[in-house]
Amino acid sequence: MIRLAIRVSRDQAELVLAELAELAPAGLEERDVDADTVEYAIYGAPGELPPLPDLKAAAGGALVDVSTTELADDWDVRWRTWHPAVVVEAGGRTLRVRPPWEEPQPGTIDVAIEPAQAFGTGAHETTRLSLALLMELHARKGSDPFLADWGCGSGVLAIAAAKLGFAPVVACDVEEASVVATREGARDNGVEVEVSRCDLRRAPGPWAPTVTANLVRPLLLEVARNLERAPDRLIVSGLLRHEADEVAAAFAARGMTETDRREGSEWSALLLEAR
Image (tube, rainbow, N blue to C red; front, top):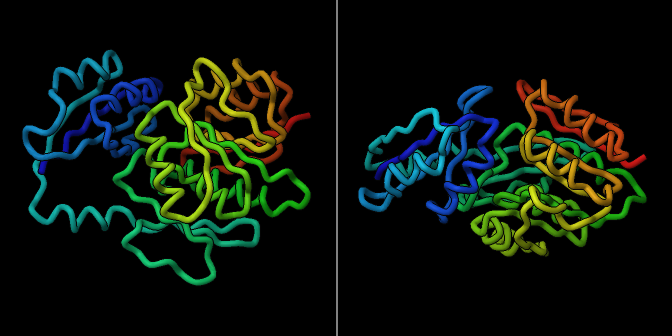
């Protein structure tokens, strides 16, 4: 088995991901290398991986490096150790995002996500920060429970929202692999999520009173520019800490005020509310 890794500049990572997803419809592994670089990895047997010229063309000027690694025979066993369960405590509740081979734990809101399905398993700091804000938001009383997830990836936020009690829940993503993964994940978790394709660079996602958007700074700035009707509440993440103020200002120009912020070691998530 071969691991093919493509490292690209963070500011163009979302654009590159859209191109790479066409070459790897089964999904890619995403990993932060540093503040400026993102790594996407594809796994396959020799002869099954996309040709290197095609990968380099997909990355274009954002390309930093391409490397291949031959994996040991027991890689599929060791691979599981790289995907432990993620526990988030907020709003007086505990939510656990686990791979399907781990058992659920009593007293937690259980979300099972297959790491190989698409782009994101809940382990990334931006997802954890978004989940914490989402759990705090759900703990409020009297808010409309209708929620939309813009750029759903593997469906972690949408499925977690449905598990928390938001309903209806709709989700969208530009990648067909993400749409499929979210639908399958919702089915496997026994929740209802309506999933469709959307291109947030061209038009807003489906409207709901509460929206989650775990994207990246350039795309969030485009979302703010394209926003036709602000949601009542918007959770945004995918932001390095120094990018948060700029994005908050972009949505302030659309009538939304920052009311909460969660920060990790490098990343931020914001709760914005309509004035």
